[in-house]
Amino acid sequence: MTLQQLQQIIIIAESRSMNEAAKKLFVSQPNLSAVVKDLEEEAGITLFLRSNRGIVLTPEGEEFLGYARQVVEQYRLLESRYIDKDAKKKFSVSMQHYSFAVKAFIELVKEVGMEEYEFAIHETQTNQVIENVRSMKSEIGVLFLSEFNEPVLRKLFQEYDLVFEELFVCDTYVYLWKGHPLAGHAIISMKELEEYPCLVFEQGKENSFYFSEEMKSTYDYKRMIKADDRATMLNLMVGLNGYTLCSGIISEEINGDDYAAIPLKESEKMHIGYIRHKGAKVSPLGEIYLSELKKYGNPMN
Image (cartoon, rainbow, N blue to C red; front, side, top):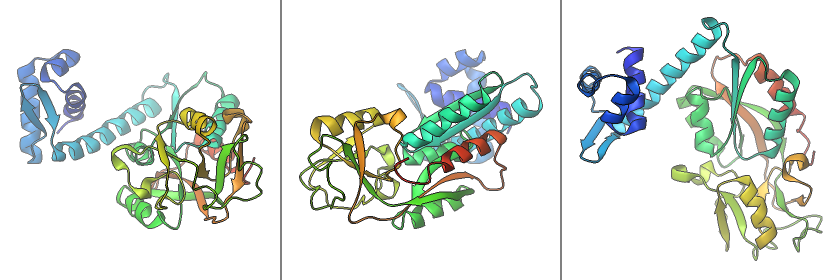
């Protein structure tokens, strides 16, 4: 099993066609088929299922591909850091949909500049945040733990050799637009929210209560709308008097000043933190980013 073979398997999986993959790799299809056969025999599994419409990964192939991507990405990081001296240093972060985490990223880029560095930011689903750190696509993943989801997520972190570092603890807030009928309240109860739609971020295939980005994910809501991005969420707050349950830590520079975070009567603690690979040292850029995140430790900043 070689690095080149792993790279070829990744291209095949992404192309979903042996012909297309062979063209991209500038090799013949028979040679590429031989690579797949050799790897399948060596690993003792079937990587792909073939049909007239193309190829798809088997469950065993999906798992194998996950490890292959980690190996290839680690080699790329090693190469860029120690071999290719002219390459820009890279920093990538993944996060749940937090405007304050985006703002911290902006401050990092402003501080260090872009001449010597290549940056990437992924505001995405919870499972993808974890997977991005696991596969080393991102150095840091920003998410939260609660009394409800902590046992499940910590078990997952342990399985993936990840560690969670807490940044700060906050209460639960109701986030809505300032024209909402409840916006003038000093505190809001779940009972008062019943007639309004609760807005939650879609979690895709991993749509488990434990992966929810909002507190009280198991509450029996009368009305609920799922959204894919933060801009849509904000529009739904205005158009439908929707709301979401969050940390109360908002960046007006990112979201605008038309929204408010009001304490929830049935508040629960949110432990905002980040995940990283166990034993991996946080890079200098990572340290700067974390220091920016810590500035948001007091809700309503």
